[in-house]
Image (cartoon, rainbow, N blue to C red; front, side, top):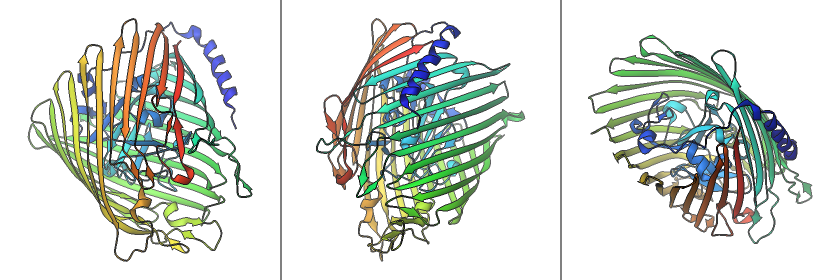
Length: 631
């Protein structure tokens, strides 16, 4: 276990050695104007750079400046800024995050990437959010797409794609030290960037945090406090035709000791891992371009209560863009292999305990102009997995731009959530006789999706986006009465809703932003099913949620930011809706030194955001002080 105190001391010592490296830099850049934001290049919707205003998808961009001004200190907290995501905190370090419903602690219909590395866990197709960490100050933007992205990104990109994109090391030169402490924890991070030979740059970073336990319902203390440390690096080389990136991270962390389950000491949840990634992009003649990426990712998780997976993932992918007159053809393919061994816990085991899984894919997409204002994009991906063989993931999109400031778009797509080991191989308890077992014939869950969207910027001070959607579901995961229950595909139906957000530069020193999402579900067990839980086991989602943000630029290099979030009640198990108010006051004490005070959940001592009545946690108010020092 890496001790947080050791990390903090090391970071402070490293910062002192870097003070002489750079002169003090000015206070952070002002937030992008709405016109500049519309011209941000995004890549998640089409797998190649395009302007945000031209992206035919329900895509929201979280900028680095928005993250800074929110006061967020973790990646899940930064994701709360996206109005098309549901983010629910379970305890001190665990989150349930989804788009368009099906939210739970093991949500499996949302694809998450960090700098091109897929971070969902193949054995259950979801994300351990307590294992995913980045230095937030190094993030360039987070592209959040709600809706299917299977044609380009493959299985699991069913309800959305989160793509965390960090800055090039060329844009993070010099030193940066960030230290924070508050009623719910403390953290520190340090980064230093420099030149690496001719045409190259690099950065190294280290960060550590310790989170206090939250409280159980009824004010009893919980045992979910956590400490964590992470080190990483990135190097970039670039010229007018070629870009090369190599980067990696290593981390380790643990919760507090959790005591006993019956007579069994279940100890801590410990997680560690390391990864390395390389990516080469090159522009060819006649407007062509190629991209090659490969990464290796190792994770080890020790949870004596549930299960204890150790996993190694190797992934390689290639894509080639070819302009052909009025057409732009994009094609490519990839291969992924995951080797795991899942040691049993008190509650669950996997049979077999060890497995090797492989995925192979080929995709092609054609974007072509019908007229100057009308574009069509069609494509498909063929992906093979070891459980169900080849799956097809087609989509078609139509874009109409009546003017430069408006975009109408519509899309039809087919997406699947392919089986994982949790569906086929899980056992409760670990040894027979089993109460619940994976289904040997479990198939892919299927979604057929219809979307209609509109995006506009009627003036230089106002922009907004609206998307309506409907998902038709088939073969959703279901169960049977215990004992002897097996996992099946016996739930179907539809979900539908609306997503909208906008920004208004109300005055030179005041920006307002807001968003709302509405979700309705009509899911049912299919004829012949004996599932006693039915759709309630598939996720617990609010019927609506909304958010308002106000950012004030005050005199004397001061800032005031207010965020109000309202999340509707969760139906089953019932969780009351809540309203949270977060406030941040920032002050540039002098160039290069930024002091901020952040209050989260200010007008509520504690509230529950998710989970069942037996394990419910209340998320308390948090007051924190942060210092950001550019060296």
